[in-house]
Length: 114
Image 1: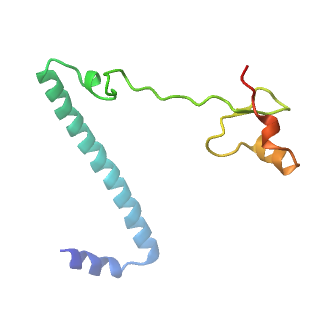
Image 2 (image 1 turned 135 degrees about the horizontal axis):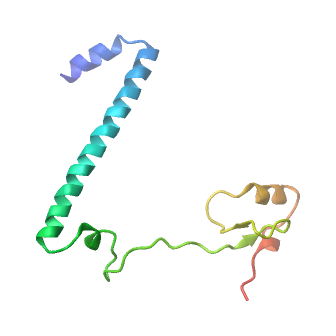
Image 3 (image 1 turned 135 degrees about the vertical axis):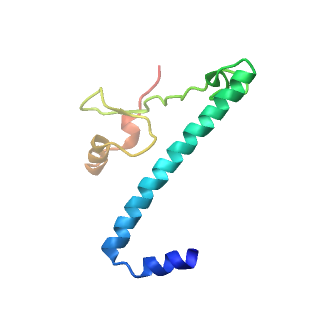
């Protein structure tokens, strides 16, 4: 079967292959979503059988508390606009890139916690 598929694909032009690729991506997305729905339904049934709701079971840490995403606090502040800050994580914002390109120091932008 796989050899037959490869043989058919090898006869396609680049444009046709790219079109097939897009169709496959769409099918993968649909299949994944379908499987997620089936799994979620099964998990809900399992939770209900134990007298719980799915939300009572998933996204909990070891102590049973709901997991929450911790937000990083700002570490650096734009001297030209105090409302603009950066946590020091992820991509550097444009205002910081410009500041550093003009000879500024990252240390001078550090927010001092009182």
